[in-house]
Length: 103
Image (tube, rainbow, N blue to C red; front, side, top):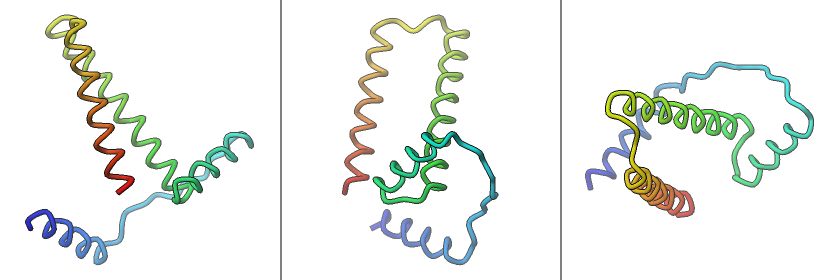
């Protein structure tokens, strides 16, 4: 029940506060713009939402890489077993996220 309450309170508060957005104008090669249009349509979203999600994903990846590099500077290089464990965890997380999106 607690998850429902949190989700409900989020929805209620979201409607009272306008989401903050900054408008940008960008130029893209035609073939890339067309591919983005197709990808957004396939996912049932807007081009703006698709680009925002894709950029956020890239920024999370970059932050993760920096975090790993910092950890390795402090503790030494990851072992092959640690890398394999990390990849297995990431794949499991991606499967969970994928199943949530399709639900």
